[in-house]
Length: 465
Image (cartoon, rainbow, N blue to C red):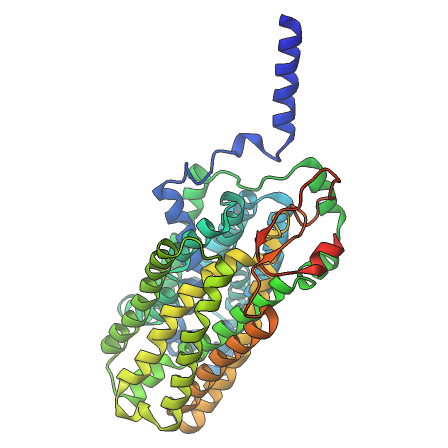
């Protein structure tokens, strides 16, 4: 009897160790997350916007120092954005294959080195190369969403957690240029890159000591994932009505944000005649609205615990449409002529609503794709970077022609209304359940009961698996 018991215990141990990629790294659960983990998640989310946007006000100094033109200087931003788009897709796919932790460690090491190198270059060509490398590495900014999918199985809890993690992103997007301008005027543009490299290096050290591997896959699903090509996985994602609907909604949200951020400093300083310090203070108000949006979502989730994420997102469509209509009204009347308060109110309202909607939408978007959540996040990031970057370029060109906030407000309002229309057409106003297999790539078993998940009826995924 004793031998039978020991043999059963041994087999149990082997089975438990064979169930996951790295059983020694199974310590990160919702119950074991500590403050240091939150710091790492937030750092990964905000470092990309900081290192990619903080040096923008210092472009004139950089151009003179490197002996080039303003047009070539702008390439540093544009090439960095395009490299980031591909970095999100590539790093997301690689993290599904090799794990989150090794991809983060390698990428952060290269990222820190590229930022440090930017502070030493003497000519434009190596600077642009290093900026492309750094932009590619900035693709790690979306990996916290994949990590959250690994850690939180419950999408509602994951949405609330992501709201806190992503809540500071508007602050970094809009405050980074102001901080970079002040820091650069005091210390120069080269130390700004060294500061960014030091922040990335500290995040690297924190991950080495405190962040375990979070990716967990069974051997069967691992073989199926590795056997599929990248185009096949992309087709799986794009065949999902839920994924396409939420991704399009988030892309249009980013169009609204980028239409503001690309001309914000010009509007405040040139059109409204603010000082750099005053413009920075106003930008901080906008960022605070985003943080309040994260808090508001947690309150909303507490007040309506029976609401699914999809139902909550539908409830937020009405104020989102009202915001878009007000932006267009402010541009056409034009209300923006009566002071900077109208312009700031428009974007503050957007920052508030986008953080109430964005993290829940990202949480729900990856829910059906546990085995390829990194790719799901990366592919979404590719669209969320390319399309809004093109929109921001158009807005910047229209600003050069009339130098008023009118066109920016029109683009922001139109993007907000299109987001609502796209959501309604793609996901509808009713229905909050679907019945896919337990996981995207798992073979359904006859004895396996169908599980209802918080999404919409999605026959394409059910039939494809």
